[in-house]
Length: 574
Image (cartoon, rainbow, N blue to C red; front, side, top):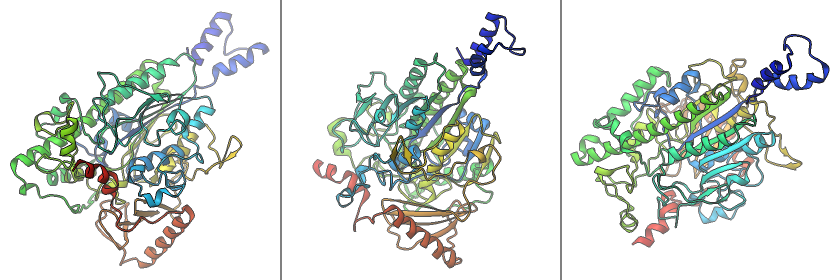
């Protein structure tokens, strides 16, 4: 029973008019009864979802439920996160820079030289407070179902970081159909429930299971009128890209024209949707294969990989819709703030080869995985879209995951619910991942800490609270002269107003910084470094200040990200 329902029953039972005089001894009870319901929060995080992978941003993929949230709320087309999963999750949940919260990179990619430093462990340190902890202390029920990847020792699991009920996958990823690891770097898939090791059910499919458990957790406390915070970090669409066949088959033939055609279709659709400025240009991401040069069988296999990818996004959206329907059924939908976004840009790792083979084929033979066309995406299959297809997901942006270019950092953000005006609109106001935690707290009327939490000193939240912008009472989120630095695995950027400087030392071996106006040129096609040398030098100075203030360490010479993650495992298979 809700508080307002209790008020009505109270007045009827005792014959007291809520509009007339009220005896003094009833005043406290009626004041509480008339108080508005406290707001719930549903924070949905897709994994490796590209900038134009949802229909409100120009995708051909069917996402009606995310589109409904966009129609009821505000979409941010200039939202930026980290280029890899764990750093993004750590900043999202704490509002603290990744070099201060303990997660400057995923632990699997940290070289031994950097693991010697306390702030380079790749797991959430004890100097930060999570959004869940803050909300729990204010009376919220706190739930998490999905990928955690911020540590898997008891003190690092989500059950020890503010969440009441949890289903947590602790690794970089895992199979979506059964309890098995997806890379030879793990001995097993590490799943936990409420802090204890967990066995998945036989009918497991990740997106379905996460929503099933979220609904179960919410239902378990539905009668006590306390608000809830539900954090749902999906595995979709992290590799292995897998989806029920009925979803993948919906996209049969859609990608047969190849990535060049589909990338341009996405660009035009994104313009029409208002996700990018009219006339936005796009470059060909280096390393993209020429579709016409591939054999017919290769093109067929590449197209099917994208069909499965689209099916996985579609399935995720359908299950999000199930949660929305449930919240409507218990009269909590209108009382809930929804946040939908992605941890980073599309995955472009080249693990599945153009002929359908794989760099992991020896391991596939050992554990029973395959990448066969006929069963791609189904139980027992291993799928990834690869770098060329990733340019569709990122369209019209350059590059993809791990890069500091826009394709790695710019992803969709949709927010809907009480306190969010301009319904159905899009904004190109710059927002960074650390801004979400303080904004969510203000939207629900909970105070953010100022560097002191329950009597101990912690890292202060650095993100900007943009709740006034959401309410329509402020015209900007960040001052145009305020610099925001970023570094991950040797790739770096700094944002300031409409401008961004960027260098991809790892993966692209760049030696020079680039300067772009990312509001007018999100495709990063016009390097302004030579035209505006004074601004470039100013922003380079800002970046050096960021490095010094956050103790950003240089990557070792000859560092190779893929080699760091897979090197030892692949050598053992030879």
